[in-house]
Length: 102
Image 1 (cartoon, helix red, strand yellow):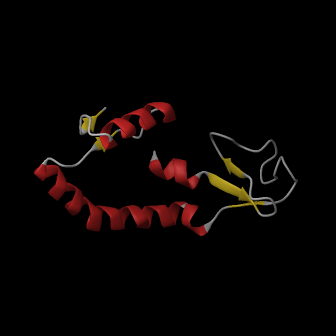
Image 2 (cartoon, one colour; image 1 turned 180 degrees about the vertical axis):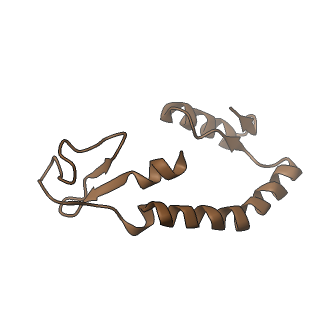
């Protein structure tokens, strides 16, 4: 899911309008609806780069996450929900609510 979300992002070279292959595609592939400019994908949004970043995350960050989870001080929020729902759960976690929300 993460690779598809990040890897689907595109920008207009001229006006920087953002697009997404799935969630907000341009009317014509590769062409900005706003100014007619060419769309491009940043290097950090390319699927191979994202895959490498995930590998580093698993190697270097997961042990830190596990450490704080074991201490009972890690707030976990399911990011695979509608944006308003995720925002609500994040606010609840930050404000000192339940540290583990669906």
